[in-house]
Image 1: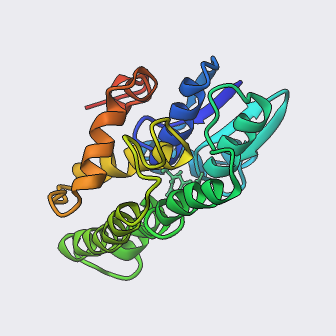
Image 2: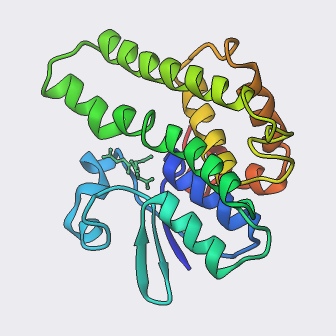
Length: 215
Ligand SMILES: N[C@@H](CCC(=O)N[C@@H](CS)C(=O)NCC(=O)O)C(=O)O
């Protein structure tokens, strides 16, 4: 498998975690999101993913996009080390937690949105950072409440085995810390993130240890 990847991309980080949890080898093909105005915007990459976003995963000559769809595909094709619970209610809960991050926080704080706010909408750097912080705080407050409100909460988001929700959580916390967001209002998120990062599959997916990592 080939993963079109970028060390700091939280969406690619989700897929790296999933691949590692399943013990699946892959070739990482870096797509630098900043250099030369962004390699994701160049025709060569748009031919792979017309959305001009990473990740994309190629398996058996077919290209898959969207981290959630990729993780669910991996889980279906490689059922060992399941990333979703067996029961329908559990699966709905895990998907909801993942989507609270993947739909409600991440897309409005994505690189292209932040660039638009500064370059087209004329926001200052301070206003852009305030936007970023606001939507992370809104999203994490909701996530913290939703996690606290379930008997399914365990060592991780859902019980004591990592799920797709955990694949989404760790990269989003990484982003928040990178943007200096105070995490003290979210003790459950902080606890789960710390426990997950001790797992080898999560540690090996961390941006700092990727081949394309730069300071
Ligand atoms: N919903 C997509 C999001 C993918 C995405 O937004 N990727 C970001 C990196 S985390 C990206 O490629 N950004 C490039 C840009 O904004 O130009 C997924 O889950 O795969």
